[in-house]
Amino acid sequence: MIRAFAGEAPDKTTNRIHRWFEDMGAFILGASALFVVGSLFLFAATQSPSMLQWTGTAVRSVENGGIAYYSFHGQNYTLDVTSPLLQTGTVYLDPADPSNAMFSNPLTRWTDIATIGGPYAVSVLLLTAGFARRSRRRRLEGRGPGRSFGTGLDQAALGRLRDRQREVERRRGGRPDHHDSDS
Image (cartoon, rainbow, N blue to C red):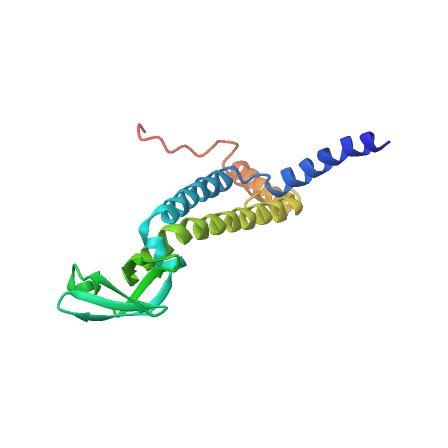
């Protein structure tokens, strides 16, 4: 009894998921590709030294003569200032190894946010656009033929136009109106 019930459950679940993503092929493909790109950027960011700005401990530093001085738990450490742009006054360090430190760099932080969060955000926007498009299409299909914009003229209008055309042809003696450039 349990096997029969368990055998039916995936079919219902699969059908429900299939209905959710029905008619969204390009949107799902784009969102999936961007999700993979975002995941690759996330993996690369976790392996980079700039990850210390996210996981490290921030401490104040004082720069003097091209060397930044900072202390952590009573121990003093130094860090070379390789560029005047790096003089921010904040150093991020690894609490397990306080000599492993780097200067705070807002550009690096914003680049990390954009390269990791950007693809994920666009992926969500693509799925949202796909769901909105699918919803609109289902709503228009639900109106039935002849009831939605762009499906054609109603029968009464066609009848009036046909009657008008027959009246014009009758007045001309049944001859169609020709616009040949040869005559």
